[in-house]
Length: 284
Image (tube, rainbow, N blue to C red; front, side, top):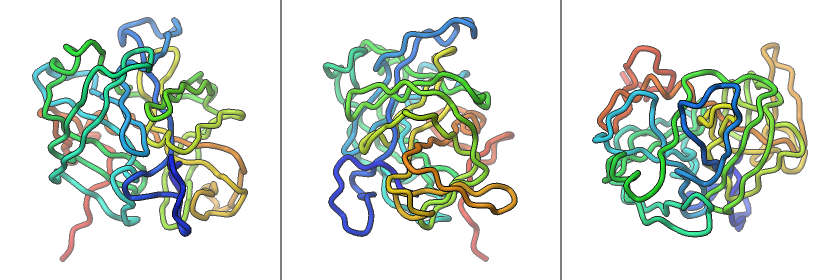
């Protein structure tokens, strides 16, 4: 399981704690558009950070006065243990907010807390900004909405990379029972169709459903060399334990399970009904 890093310099892994690598971000259109109308996707709501991509996201129900959240991969925070879950940690990180064309910056966004991060079961991180949703949108952008629904096979998607300023056009090929990469295991991952090929630096990119313009996943890894279940070479494991290796195929982690956890105030409530994010393991 290995995120796509923008600059590969390490001998053991491609995941640099300071510059992980995986998916690519995408910008979307009015969240209220009819489901049967395709949305033009640009770089709206997308951010870049060192070695990774990300996006400013919100649940369907939110207050403009709530602190805004930036979503990226857990491995873009640091390479976390297979069962590690970080909740409400101090953070000091800066993100560059892109304009809709990806050619320029609308300004810098500052995170004061790491609201949540893990590489256990999924690969996601949520930073709480010092700015509210209203203040972010006042910069001339629109915040991306997280879809509360499980995506469907065959759906047309876009992976929008703030790091590379590139949008990848793809489709959902299917879903993976377990995706294993090195010491990490992710569940119900999205498999992209060929030739969808987000490269290093696209880690943390939002994956947008073209029909709704909503975020349905976060880009995070791909099998680089055809190896079996090694770093940068994830393998698929079905419910019967059968392993399949798909060289060159890329994957993302679904985000619908995050929506019930976002109950306001820029915090992640892991006890909220329906919240599907892993909780920290308790010690006796």
